[in-house]
Image (cartoon, rainbow over all chains, first blue to last red):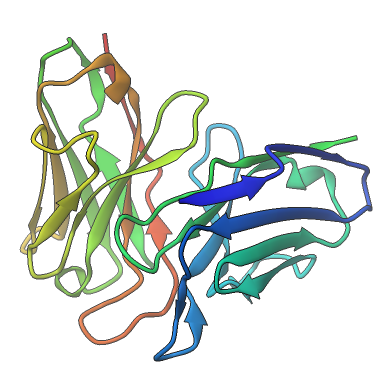
Length: 111
Length: 120
């Protein structure tokens, strides 16, 4: 089970936004020391967009204000300086084993 | 580049059936597992089914016995046969490409644009 907090978040433009994700089991694969954890951004009417994989690797083309951290069971997505276009719902996902479960989502808004 | 295009969605009555297709390009389809993920209106993401590159499969408990995932490597296409449909199956259905092929994993999952299924 993946649990995100908070469920919703309002942050001022230019300020930092932080979303947490906790897994009920470790997603750290010891043989390669990789965390099988991804972060997605979803805007209305669009499919989820991959932002971060391996818990902290930013996908090519994703702005560097997005960063991921954590290991084992506890992870964080940070947006260093919120922009208007970052308004969206954010999901974490473990892909350590099937079923690839998702957090419930965090709705990010502008304060 | 990797492309996934879902089709086959529509309106179906409760108890009815529907087959979704996901046609792919830009990668060696036969070497990758494929997933189906759905999203009910206004809700979060729910994993539905998976088919490994060797044909073995897994299902969410909510669809087990009603949905069947299959693949045709000659057509680079994965299918989701849905039967005994219920109102709660109403959702956008996405296919996704797994991040592992037969020899390695790169951590990147690709998604299609989705197809809407309405059971009413």
